[in-house]
Image (spheres, rainbow, N blue to C red):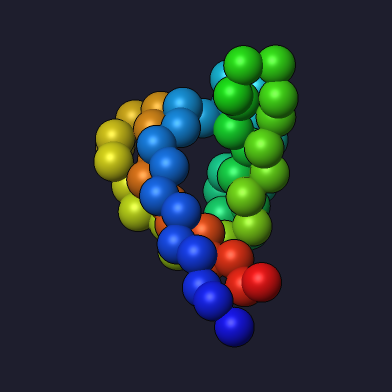
Length: 62
């Protein structure tokens, strides 16, 4: 099975700072244009201490 590694830098969705998911880090909410993306924790690295930007990798198996 081929493995595709996707690296994305996204700004965290503004409304996410009011959600409890930020504290338990089970998943994150991102906004790309008009699309909200829920990223379940796989591999996440903090880029900004203010929780405004994250670098995360998503492994997709086809």
